[in-house]
Structures are given as structure tokens and as C-alpha cells.
Image (cartoon, rainbow, N blue to C red; front, side, top):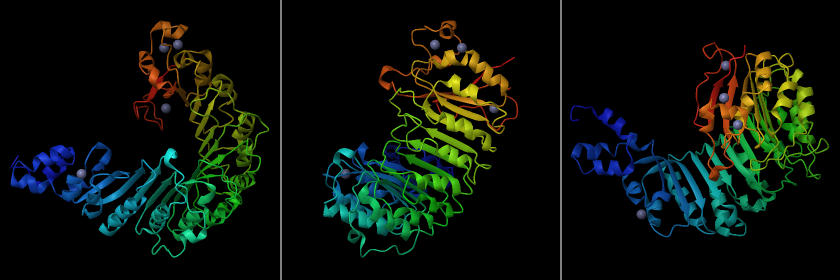
Length: 475
Ligand SMILES: [Zn+2]
Ligand SMILES: [Zn+2]
Ligand SMILES: [Zn+2]
Ligand SMILES: [Zn+2]
């Protein structure tokens, strides 16, 4: 080992766990000093859920990510006296306290100069800290921490008044990604961030766990972000103005189909006017149930809009994971829209549907560029039975270049009941059957008929353990 150069040893050490690294300190002088090299630690993620992190905070010069849960009863000072500079802080709260300590930790890391990302997660059960002065200081600190590239704020009741944000400023815009869980109180905080980092923001996600009625002043600020590329947001009043963002090419709109008081005109306006959309997802929460529900025909607007001839990816989401309800009232609008979307390559329907009905209705001449269709199978449908079905063959036969992705809760019959499962083929599907504790785990299968060796934009190889490629030759 003494013949190995330092940089090789350092590279090896990047793969060692913290315990092993500290063990190296006791072997020899050379290893003891190499183990404290920056390059060993700048790729490490440490979480205090695994126990005391004091030795790391005392010795390591830096970390990629530090995950901390507040309030802290022990080791408090180690977090605020440390010289270990982290690039990402992930903060969660177990109880309704600890905001002051969290603020001190953020300030310490800001001073150490490597902090680029902060994520704050507050459990719903411990939420409702709005009145807490401590929490207000935490939010003011978040809003004014310099040098951040990413900020995620989830589950915090944000300041209710403009005063809560008064007296702080953004010295130099730096933020590129901003994710915030909206509630009616969020407006001032969200607007402060959007205005302060207008020149640098590229990706904004405004999710929501409560109603967003009344959030009226945010859309114009979004519209003035010159570099906005990715937007995920609840439909907002006046959202159409965001079409002014020339770089916007990825858009996800959350539609609350049954909240009559929240019109979707703004969202429709944006889908109509945005010029460079490449990827659009329409997410209905709660899922729409009938064609009369709000926003069900938004895809029609998109198909008549300025982006229609270069949209590459479309996803319509109309289900909740744990529900097996079959509702897809967007079907008619989608089928009418498809012929206008001449560049569409990916289509995904995240709804529990009868796949046969939908897939047979989408003819290849309707959408010549289409290469991927994703659907979700109802729980009672055995995915293995489906890949042996006449429909599967018919769909693959008329469109040899297509890939059909099935998200299934039942990859194969567990008791070998259907005709396909009795055959004992495609055992790999059965091996993906979730155990009873993971009833809601979706497994994905992508079936295709063209020669797997053919030139195809897809590699047909496993991306992760939940995705399988299955070749079905069709003669
Ligand atoms: Zn400790
Ligand atoms: Zn089966
Ligand atoms: Zn089979
Ligand atoms: Zn292929």
C-alpha cells in the first residue's frame, strides 16, 4: 500500500464508511492525515439519524450533505461550533421546537462558505408553528442566506404578513431551484424569494397541501423570471402571464378539479400562449371524475396552443396511488388532441384505465412520432396476462416502434390462476410480485416488439430494479 500515490488512496477512501475512515486514523501517520483530505469528505452524506455525528463535525473538513433532525437534546454545540463545511443541509423537525437552533446551524454553515442547498421538512403532525417567533426568524434566515442554489421548504406555515419579510434583502441573486409547499399564508415568503432571485431562478415548484385560493400576486412574479425553464405549480390566478418566460419548456400544472371557486382560466391561458413547451404534465388532485369537472379539457387547449407542434412529452395524472377507482374523463379530450401534437414522443396516462380501450384507440397514424405510451393497470388485471393478450399483440403489431409501459400493482397472479400464469413463462414478472406489506408498490414493465438489437432511441436495459423490458416478438 505504501507504493500507492496519495490521490489513489484518497480515491479509495471515498468508498469507505465513516467508521472505517476513523479506523484508518489509528493505523499510520500517512493514512491518518490522508483520511482528513477534503476529497474524501466532499462526497459524503451524513445523517444524525444514524447516531452521534460529533466526531465527523470535529474532524471532517467538509461534507456533501448533512441531515439533521431538530430539536436536539444532545450534541447541540457540535453543530454550531463545527468547522466542517457542508454543501447541503437537510433539516427536519420532530417536534414543535428547535427552530432557533436550526437557524444557528444554517448561519454557521453560511459563514463556512460552502452551503449551496437547504431543504426544510416539517412533518404535518408537528406543523402549525405560524405564531412562533422562532419560526419566523428561521424563515427570514432562509430567505436571506446568501449563495444558495437550491431551497426547498415543505410543511411550514409561512409568514402571514408582509412585515414578516421586512428589513431583509437578497444581496446577490443566486437561487436556481426553489420548491415550496404552498398554503394561503405563503404568499409573502414565496414572492420575496421570486423577486429577490428573479435573475437566476430556473426551476420553481409551488406544490400545495392546502387550498391556494387567494394567492393572486404570485403569477406576475413568475412571469418576470427570464431564465425560468421548469415550472410546477397549482393553477394560479393570472398564470397566463407566465407565457412571457421565453425559456419555459417544462410545465406541470396541478388542477383541483372540484374546487369550484378556483377557475383554471389562468392555466388554460398559459397552455395556449406558452411558445416553447416540450414537456407538459397535467395533475388532477383530487382526480376528476366526470367530463364536467374543472379543467378536464385543458389538453384541448394545449393542442390548439402555440407549443402544439413541438411538444415531446405529455402526461395526464388522474389517480391516487392507493385508489383503484377507474376515472379518466380526460380520455375524449386527449384522443381529440393527439393528432395536433405532431412531435409527441412520450405519452403517459397516470390513471387507472382499461388499457385495451385506450391503447387500441391510439392509432400510430394519429401520432406518428409516438414511441412510448405509459398506462396504469387496474389492480385486478394481471400484467402477465395482459402481455399475452390479443390487445397487446394488436397494439405492438400495428406499431412496431412503440414501447408500452405498464405500471402494475399485480405483476402476475400469486396463485397461478390466469391462463398466462399457469404456463410458467416470464417468471421474472412473478418475481416482482409485491409482498403483502407493499401492496401499493407499482412495478413497471415495458413491452415492445421490434428486435432488441435494432437501432432504437431506447437502450432496452434495466434502469432500476422496478423497471423491466420485455420483448414480445409479433409475427
Ligand atoms: Zn454527539
Ligand atoms: Zn396471471
Ligand atoms: Zn408469459
Ligand atoms: Zn425500442
